Image 1: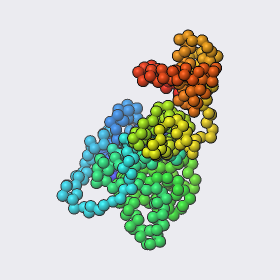
Image 2: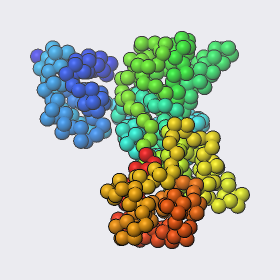
Image 3: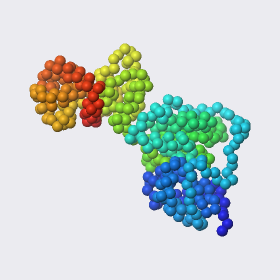
Image 4: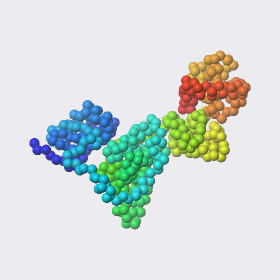
Length: 451
């Protein structure tokens, strides 16, 4: 039987049909992780050659999905085929054009290009937590192999969770890896305004060249175009042009793809061609890590207890965390000491309305439950070692997590003298610095009290 030679477009069409069939039998997670990133680059003889973005994918594909992929290919091509998987860049199709020589590269016009990238947003400055781990991994993958790993990458999540940071980090890393890459970051609002201006000034070609003659398009807040038919149509053709040229597209949105109102079905479908990831609200530990990083960037030293307090009393918006740290930094420049009271002052504009106030009763209750004691035991006059240690911890936490003075804390502990409270706080403070086990206990308690 004579071997059929397939064009690149034909191979793409064959594989798209196969993927539709595979969607019916492969779990959505495995489909997005392993199948969607496969590229059918050649059918030579009786072998279909695929490229994969990551080495670890090959073993799973060969052991779990080899027969599934082979069978849908045979059905689509009406010929017997085996399947081979190759890491990207390690297989060259027959007759593939050689890479251009350096002299040929130098003849191309070197036009300066404004990327709109913010250099401070990098992967190094991005705090990774359970809420954003998958989005971060996908972003790193496409920055290493733009246009091949996950294209497009659709990132969604509510405002202020780090989508914009991640998009800039992708662009900055791609340019760092290859300075010749043309990367453009814009919001969909800017895209819309420039499109309207291009129509008004009859500069459609200039507009299209700007958005289509690039290597990477990072477009933020795509929901802005949801009710704009002309803009959606123009973006559809921009998207198609970049995608067909294997240029990387990254899109962010404040809601899931299926929740965007009045979005053309053809755009909705194409946005889901690559990989869809979400960024969720950060957990308490991630918020504290972000605050630590922001404090370090502002060269200010903030006690852990104050950072814990801020993390609890702010919303899930990362920009608010930055705002509180900026307030503390400005106060420090004015000669003020960074204390819990100062943090409370900074929190006035950010504080969540549905938070319970932390007071001595909350702390004493949490400590007593942690040590399997009663509240009466903690407040009693007994001075056994089993009671003194939890009592001192309770006093220390009251001092650090509330606005209570030493005398106020003494009154809350059945009228103890303020010097007793001061001594307890000093002892626990010293021990925390040198005793890892005690530090772990304190971290657990603060988590229980605050969260």
